[in-house]
Image 1 (cartoon, one colour):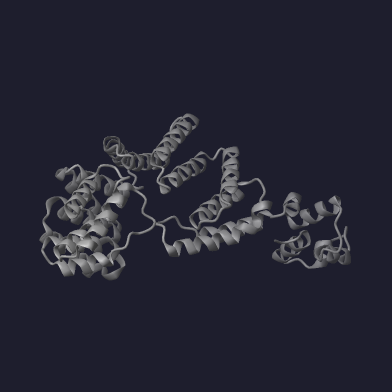
Image 2 (image 1 turned 120 degrees about the vertical axis):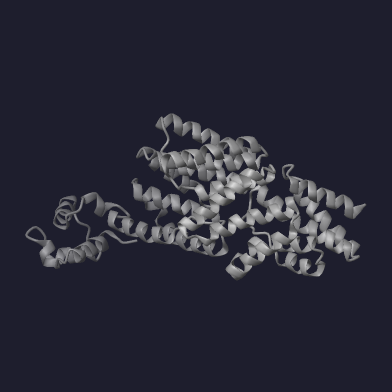
Length: 407
């Protein structure tokens, strides 16, 4: 970070001033050179004079991190920082961002730019598994609160709740999000529409995580209706995905078809193939696990694999294995099931329960191939993984497979 003298020199050069021009008639060129080279300290009177000549506030020169340096850092960080599905590549980027901010942590002034940097640092540090994210997060919230930036403070509360979610403390996370929502509704009177949708979305996710599908469905439908009334598209694809999967679990075919159709329309509207792939993934899961129409599921999987090639294989490898098993193609099914990997950043019981089916299908295949020891091994693994999860159809299926294999 720049010293006082370096800050004066940098600002002078930005203004296109020579030493003589900045010195004017109250300082000598030699004295100013000594100040810029940190060989002399200016008096407060001289500092005020220099600040006036540079057209900045004197406090900006005195701050450990002057405003222009802070703004430049924030601009650089904002260009790097994105909030998307966690991946190894994103974590590497978060480490880089945290490294850029860390040298400034102890010297940030009490202003918005500092709060935003502390906010970003906390998130990046947490996701990249560094241990110094809590104090910066508290400081960011303190600055946001003092500046009456309700939406930004609410974001930090949601972040804290979702940290509990990623650690599978689902009931605690739900309680946290509900407490925070009440707090900000009391503070603001009426929540900003986007912030209301944030709270609706995350509370709905957490209701479903604790096995309360009824309240989850209620909040999803309220959020979708609110989005239409406000003509907002914010989070609408995520809400449609969650509503579509909830309909599959409830065997509500009409709503399942409705939300998948909405997702496909939204994918066309936004020209986003990934949204379309998720819509197909919901339909394929329904065809395999509920309708048992393996031929139709397999055809839809092949369409997606041809369209998306390798970049979406994580969405379809497990379902491809299930479809081939249902069609009696055991060796081919085994190959696809072995391609499936459980994405380490999945935390919702819906996602986990679905993926835990892999070992149950492996157990069934090994049983039919006469490899009883392997069948028992995978059936036991699936049972141990699924037992803490809510009583979803996936859990019932896995426990049934375990009983069959170990009988």
